[in-house]
Length: 395
Picture 1 (cartoon, rainbow, N blue to C red):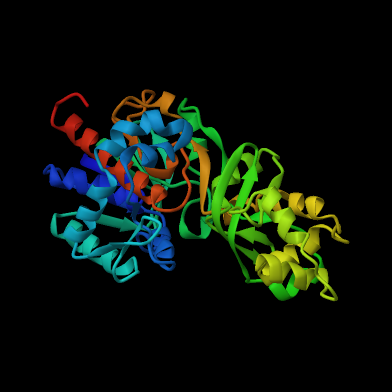
Picture 2: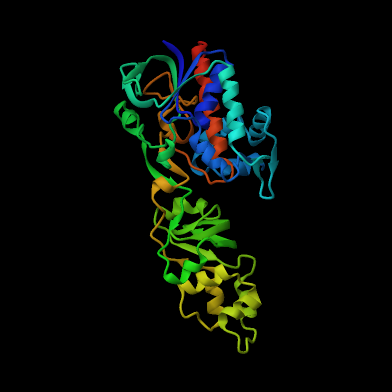
């Protein structure tokens, strides 16, 4: 029998393996893809936002309804601890102007290589192209290149990811065997997703253009940040925090001038414009960028001449949409194993000795360092509690 089995080679699974190996236990890690950390490496293409440098209270609040359950877990692996961990693997970090923390090299691959080298040096056994299919009695069953395999382990950590970016290994197919074992699984939904907008030909010349200095609102949620106009709609970190409202059908509005109140806007718009077109008038009196002007005229044509009415549009421009893009395109997913199915150590109450971590759990958070921090923290938490169980203690 294997001492410890970790299924899933992403950040949560690797952190669980790290915790178990550090406690002196033998670990077998099984991954369905040919290599480990594929989604981790994809995240690194945009710089690898490791965590967020901010006080713990606001940091925890970003996890919304799951913040109470995640509080002890994130307290055990804070944003400061994430930076210390990365630097312990030889990767210095820096903090950007918004508080986002990145490796100095702005890549994931050096960190992953150093981490795997350390785990290998601690005795990690790896199996790739091993796809978990569920349980055969007490053993975990796998489809492998060598045919079906079964592994019995004293403890198992499941870190199989969510249900987006399936080509990188996060298929969500694990939900069926869990439900078959009596574990409730909340249906998956897109999180941190782009918005599908049916643009007219008018917008084609603006595809790829950023929307900067705007605020987005939907269903009582507000987010200020940047988005990009794409052929498929709108995408970007400024929009992603609104996904919970947008997937429930809330309408999106954009404030194109969030630093000005409606009265000030109306006063500026009331300035004589002479022979200037309205578009040039907007550029002159408000310094309104071309992408903002294009979005305005895409939604409302003709624009009202009344300054107060135009100011109201600028403050709450309604964006007609078809809702979030398909779930497999989303950066992450909501849904998964609810905390009610787990004990305080993230062990399944229906299958003692089996723990869950990472995006398998039913939590969500915006981009900006929150996602990766919680994946690492839950992996560490599950690994430590699995190690404590092996040692005979109660987690």
